[in-house]
Length: 287
Ligand SMILES: [Zn+2]
Image (tube, rainbow, N blue to C red):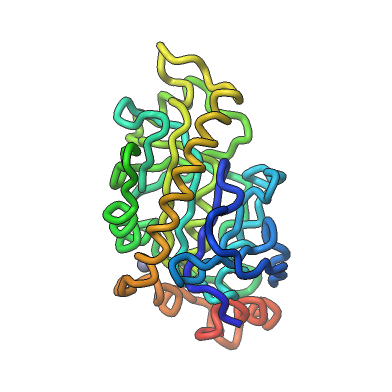
């Protein structure tokens, strides 16, 4: 039941993709439960893409409530091999202004309570994650995703925090000292699971504010966030229309499609059959 090879995960401010042909809306179920919402199948320049709003339409899921395993599994089961995700972020540097976009190449994971692996329960595997995003896809997004009037920064370190409360001042300064440029609450589990599912994954970080470190800025307020979220969401929709055809046309010559084979360490005869059955739904090549 291959429905799309390109996946789009929408974040805060990007709950739907109007202005493109909607082909279908699919209610999915996976071995890890239901995804955040129905998956919308859109046709963009003749290319089918599967769109999933991470927080659900109407924004009903907090970051730590999102069933990332179900989201990634659903997309993989639908045939998706490349995922472009969008996420609202705070800027931790003077270089990144609100309404700028950043395509990070590194990440620091400060989340604590999320399921971020398909493995365990009798099947152990450790995937390589030194480069948490697909560099090929990141370069493609940076090269082809430029929008008039929107600064697009190629590379940078994303810090993923637990939330849902925003950072303290001390935390914000700490993350700056660590060299992080942007901060969000959503990317770490998603990126790890996409890697485990052998999908290319890159995230477009859309800056809404300066977190809380900047002396001369008002502290983060919900009103300010919403206005910038909406503007960023409009820009993201424009970007999707050029990125999807470019992703479909690109040669997938990165290593993302073969990350799991050498990562599984449990002896075949010792693997829990129930877990093997679940993994077979997304990684039939190995299980
Ligand atoms: Zn890749």
